[in-house]
Every structure is written in C-alpha cells, then in structure tokens.
Image 1: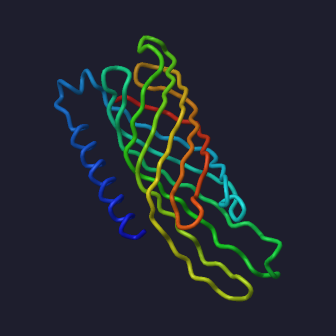
Image 2: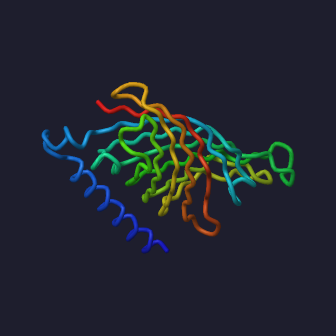
Image 3: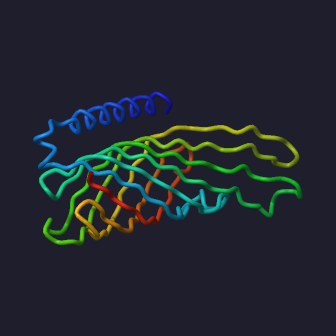
Length: 200
C-alpha cells in the first residue's frame, strides 16, 4: 500500500506540474483564456465512519487557473478542514479524542453548462490529488496517544452555481464530495461553501 501511495503521489505531482505548464501561457493567449482566482469558506459535513468519531466543521479552499474556450477551466486547488473529536460514551471521564485537520490539494478541471453570455454559471468539476489528515493527541483509557498524520490519494467532484456581479467578480455557492483513501475505512466529506471568483 505504501508503494502504491508513492506511485499515486508521483502521478499527482506530475499532473500538477503539467497543469502549471499549461497555465503559463503567453500574454496574447491569456487575453482570450483569462486567469481566475477562487476562494471560499463554509461547513464541511463528515460522512461515513469519520462522522462517528469527529464533528463536522469549518473549511476553506482556494484555487487558481485559466478559463479555456469560454466554457472550460483547468487549475490547481488546495483546501483545509477542521474537525473536533467527539466525546464518545464508551470512553472514561477525562478521556478525549484529538482533533483532525484535513488538507487537500491537487488538479481541478470543470465545464460550464451555460452559455458564456449568461450572467449565471453552473460549473461541474472534478479533481484528483492528495489528502493529508493530521490527528491531534488523544487520551484513551488513561493512555496518551501521540498525534499522527497520513497522506493518501484523493478524488473529488463538485457542483457550483454563481452569478457575475461585475466584469471581474462572480459570487456563488459550491457543493463538493471528496474521498481520501485512508487505511481501512476511507475518509469522506461534503463541504458546502460560499465563494468569490475573480478574473483580474
């Protein structure tokens, strides 16, 4: 599994470098394929086994890239989510589960389902990358368990709806589902966010 994770990490790194090279276009091409910058904030709802031990919490994400042929986009993304450990009834008094911080980063691509002349945009997107989950120190049955982290392959899909409020700024809402293929049970969540997208 460790070898597989290394191979996947190499593939993702290569994809990120390829995307960076693609985004470094000449100025005349950039006029037709404008750059965009995206930032959001919201609530990340944990699903699956992760929701049994950790609470849903705040998340924020950023992305930058280029809009291609008016209706397609390609870029790099990064995000972080903060999840507090739950008080589990099976634990003795004074015991606590450490918090979890989830980092996601990789390559994203999307397509706008509406015509470019429409002030509204409906983006369907997908991303591939790596997810790093950092667990804080826990006290379980009187024993201190040091914090640890693991980085694994990650996939995500999203649906975003936005409206242009000026020539350079759009405001919208975004729903994402992601899965990090951790050992044993995968870590899954649904971040729901509000965002601003800027075309300089």
